[in-house]
Amino acid sequence: MTRLAALVALLASWELGSRAQWVDPFLFPPPSAVGAVLYELARTGHVWVHFRVTLWEAVAGLALGTAAGAVLGLASATFRPLGEVVEPAMALLNAVPRVILAPLFVIWLGIGVASKVALSFLLVMVVMFFATYTGVREVDPRLVERVRTLGGGRRDVLREVYVPSVSAWVASGLKVAVGFAFTGAVVGEFVASSQGLGYLLSFAQSTYNASLTLALIALVVAVILLLFWGFGRLERWWLRWKSADRRTAHPAPEPAPAAGPGQ
Amino acid sequence: MSALRVCRLGVRYGQHRVLEDVDLELAEGEFAGLVGPSGCGKSTLLRCVAGLLRPDRGQVTVFGRPVSGPTPEVGILFQDDALLPWRTARENVALPLRLRGLSGREARREAEAWLRRVGLEGYGDHYPAQLSGGMRKRVALAQVLAAQPRLLLMDEPFASVDAIVRHFLELDLLRFVTDAGMAVLLVTHDLEEAISLSDRVMVMSAGPAARIVQVQPVPFRRPRDPVAVRAEPGFGPLVEAVWRALQAEVARMGWGLTA
Figure (cartoon, rainbow over the protein chains, first blue to last red):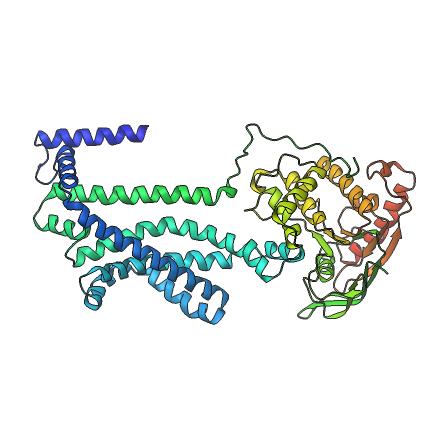
């Protein structure tokens, strides 16, 4: 509630300051003007073409990156020699800002969709690799023993312990990866492209159109927040067993001693 | 045929000899307690019997068959209950039943019956995180009993629950294993717990190279009430006899106050 009030106050003072010319309205167009641009973009349908392209690139990067990261993480965690090579490479990739590779992808893959998907893919893959790799290595050995002593074989251990344990890590990783997928797509377009939200942004910047720039930033942020929220919900549902909330309205009392089997 | 026969068992970690020449035998349906100084290798012995650890020397035979790996015939209850956190209480108890080949519906129905027997009716849909420590222990007990092992191994199973809950759990446990004719090997620090539940208490020597140094028969008949039995006139002298043996071992490790 306080945060909402602060946001409203900020927007109101911005609007007021811009209209009263306390700040340069060319550099800081009032929120109402930004809103008008957004509305105009939506009405003409002009932005949807670009939006679709960016969304496509992000989704493709997310899907491919997740698949590749998961497979590589799984293989590296189960096959030691591979892990010894791949893990440091991934750690290095994780340490450097991966977006600096964007120009290279443009040279290699052209200014079309492929170079953006590649960047998005790379950003996502590193995140998902670590989610899977850590997930497999963090499997509780006590649970493995439990299933084995209850009569489970290798496949049972895999199904009952490894898959749920790793998927918990993957679910958390996905939430982060969504943001990265969009970053990759937009930054890729920003570097060189002929369509997409990043292209529009770069166009708005080159014409010093602050209200269009702000409108596009607002749009991208809104989409990422929406996806973030969606994946957050998905994660909460998927990992509902982690929550210690009792389903009963009242804390359950310690149950009475059991009745004998004969009773 | 004996339920368990351990013959000249030896285990070493590198140069460190943990167990050496451990001999012990358990009759069918017998409840045996195993006490010993901390770190003497009691848990290592249990892991060998469960097939989770391969001994370096000697042999472990369960119901006449040499142990080569975990089998559903041998059930284990560890101190830290390792329930599957992503499975509800009912699904956890149903797991050994499904592994035995029961259909999903049958397994769920039988799991529900086991939950009722350990006093957890209506908690089937709870995840372990939503249950108290004592309740999780009950689920773990139901899970291991549902597998219907013929030999049950327990490693400090009730160490982490409070004394009152613990007495209820002991009561339930003793009734179940007596009814099912299950052989039990219970590792514990608690002498009175060992004596009040067991038909026989074995004392293990201090490590390294630990082995069984004393076997104390417990003359109280089962079924018995593990709380009421503590008031029996013979109980005190039994505790003292086992304590003397244990004390000698603890003193040998250099921790005791008496020489």
